[in-house]
Image (tube, rainbow, N blue to C red; front, side):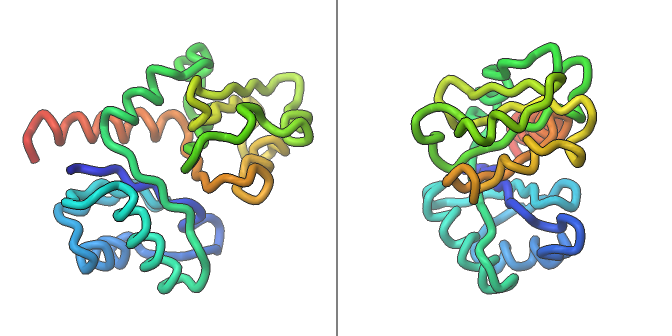
Length: 187
């Protein structure tokens, strides 16, 4: 299967620095094939013969060994990424300002189906947020910038109790396009 592997907290500021060449080599050493990285933030596309759960586990263990602490690892295929794009409950934000629409991919559905009230209360008047119908993505629009947003800062595993990693909507669309091109070419 061709898998998209989304790594959390890789190369953010000065934390968890991991050159993409090293990441590709490490993943190839785990048995992944045709390993491609996209940008410097832990986006990987690779071929894998096992289950998504097994892939998540071996990649997580390998990166924890390399970095000395756990790293969120999420795995999905092209159909799952298509579903996440199609389920975007904030389509106007995605069209007008995709760089400020953040999609948080959750490893498991958010418990109770809502953001905790203490997290939701951090949204400013111009910020919007919504959950996907299956509660495995949080879409949050930060028109004043992700780095300036208290809400964006609170969308993390510690506050929500779920492993997650976020990408801006521009990157999500680019990853989907790349996956679809690879699928169409048979590569």
